Image (cartoon, rainbow, N blue to C red):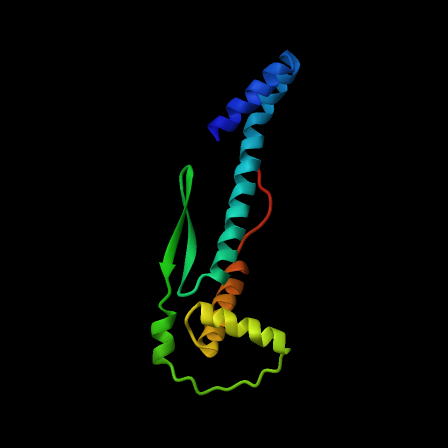
Length: 140
């Protein structure tokens, strides 16, 4: 963020004293807005990654002036092995979608059933997580 402030100040300096003063007054609100937008983008990226990553999830951790993305392995596979898989669902779909699903499962080196279970588990967990997000604007 400090480099962005330096860049803004340099741009303000090019425009003369009036623009330089305006940039100085806008620097703090601009930094707050930029931080909020960056956190929002990183949060959305984390949610997208969690849908795609098998056997784990990415967590966004905030530390004063930094954001850490951390991989956390899932315990789902252990839980999945312990649970009895006795419920059944019949699913009809286009052949092209079935082929893509089989290819994706093969790329992950798992059965189609396991691939679907993981996808549903991750997606339902992501839906729960996104429903807990707080969005809006604030002033300090």
